Image 1 (cartoon, rainbow, N blue to C red):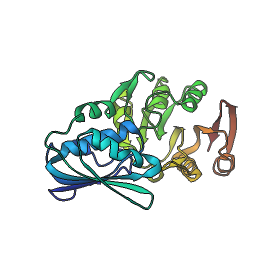
Image 2 (cartoon, rainbow, N blue to C red):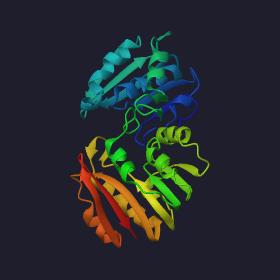
Image 3 (cartoon, rainbow, N blue to C red):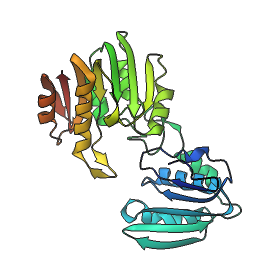
Image 4 (cartoon, helix red, strand yellow):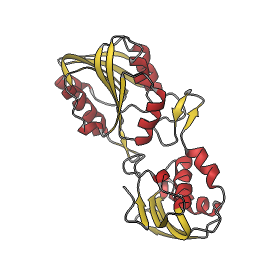
Length: 287
């Protein structure tokens, strides 16, 4: 959500990475309200940027579900040198602070939660992105089985771009659209996938309008707000089917317990289980 007016900002990660809190100028806001994210590094990064963007004496209201970081909010704000007022409502902890003249630890929290090269990945990433600091096992399993692809394709829910990097190893790929709902993931993928055949989109896959693609690669999400939501993966499968030309191919990985077979068989002319193991399933599905 963009800043509201000149003096206030209301920022929420309902769309991951939205809001672009980082772009608010130092001391430019009188009040800021944030729904703090659950991850420690991501949450401290958000709080630090909010305090940075407040004018001295400005008011920050930060809230989070008690079981998703809310219990830690008062301590974390206190560590920045804030006197914290707090209340509870509807399973949330709500904290209100007045920005001190010189809050401490902001630069360190911003550096720890900002874009960085994750050593275990060897790629640009950021706390809050899916599997931000290590290769996702499902994606690695799919990469092992992914053949040389050809034509025009898409990486739906790209994360930091692992599947796109693999797809672009084939010289027969003409173009790949690299798509994610998380702005930070798209920014990281843009830094990692430098091949000129890649184009990037910050978009909700469920509302993309690709047509006549030759291939789709994807590791569909199945959580929303921390709770399992199988309809997300099913929506990805429907979008892949609608985006492919007749004879086009979708390669996907899914957690083993997810019952996607029915949807694949209904939406594709052929679907085969390529491998099952390590808690995952690999499918090839053709339109």
